[in-house]
Image (tube, rainbow, N blue to C red; front, side, top):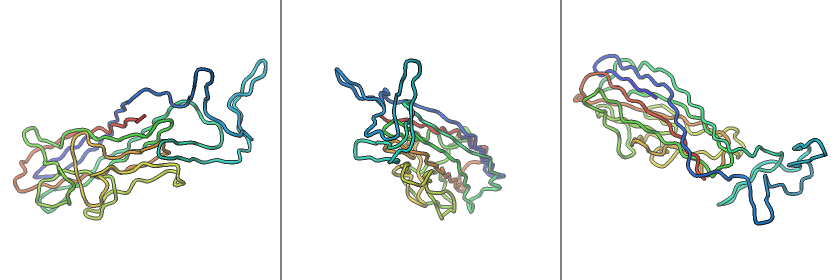
Length: 247
């Protein structure tokens, strides 16, 4: 996400999606084994499913008429019930951003913008979403980032972010689970999860899932306020959403 702003004139907020992926740990996700045995994609009471059915010339994975489908979890484990699933770990990330002309920004106006991050993962213990980058700067002066969750105050120099629905200013949305059927578990992270409170530190975790999860759609909301002492000039800042799987 690239931000460009002009103080004492027309303020233009330009957001261009930048995505970085990180990997943490080594993946052994789907196999349990001992000296003599190995279990792959564990199957219990396979009424309608089979991991491998082979003849002399062919092998197939079969799924038909499963009695139970869905997911289950405890404090330490997750399970998916029903048809055979792939043995490949998955981390899928989609970002969406756009260009917003914020007009003339002064001490009586709060600049706002949103970007969107969609994440789903499979065969991992969850993921974290970090936001990296320095607050917008015009070369000599950087806008003041909110170091603790704070409300928006016009006339005070502020730069902040959160990942929830706000009323002051009216911007953003709470994380959306897709599908909304108990398979998705992404949430906004601490310090970024309270309506009307904004915060920012380079590298902070802004969202996360503590287990394998279907798709969660996050709305990243940004605010900018300027003071009478904010120097004029064109302010720019580049931000990256870094999504890291956890094992």
